[in-house]
Length: 383
Image (cartoon, rainbow, N blue to C red):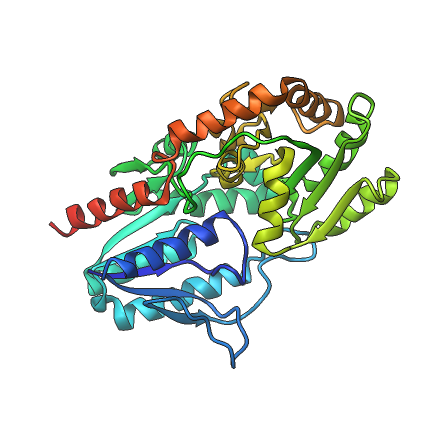
């Protein structure tokens, strides 16, 4: 089958859950003998093009920042990527049986829908997230937020096959006016499915992810300092980078946390794995998550997770209270600290139950499980 994967980011030039999903998906499809093209924006030096085994990577828009000075996504980049998508599919659409793309940035979905009559391909769209009206307003303001919501709604009403990665966003997609078939893909994890063995935890809370507004990485600093009242040797490591990294560094300084909280930026996979495996807990203070891959990654290492309840946070679907972690009521220092303290009090039994939770759910949460559902959808569409 001839498959076009379309996303404006490519791992590891951009780091995030969706980036890893599309790269893993493209490489697995190629391994299975499918002809795979990945269209994206240019993110690499001209003399060092990306090399994905069996995958043709095509840059259809220029290299430019995704985020503006305010930490929000820019408008120009999605427009230019959408225009590049339209041009590519008008020229090459008939070379593909399936075009599989992210819903965001939305203009590429509208472009693929416009070129479909000429290209005659099946259109498949992943909805990692659907933003609520309130979130659009908070993110862009009144008028711009309403315009963004209208574009999102227009994409939802395009004829396509839809994948969601949480029940929350499946329900939102249907409420937004989608009338087609929705499949919930629960698996994005590409690591080993072997159950971890419980190990002894070090008193370290770990954050791993992009430093963007909705991740609220800086919230870990005051929470850890507060939790040290009951866990005196507690420390934290905040991995990652992004437009809000300055807030993390400022929080460390403001709370006199140097030597207690580290922020080493992005590190190699081995260092991240070793730190996460021995951590007391992984803390994800996000207000908004479409899936929450790092919760599964932590569980695969026998490490419980702390996530935060919220109307836009689908990561709570991956935490079974008291089994593989706990849900904080908010990202306020006292609530996050209390959640970290709950994991600490639970001790070895929660580490054992986290291992058991992963063993029970590993296949369901695996990339391979989702891949089989994706391929089945492709073939149904072609029939």
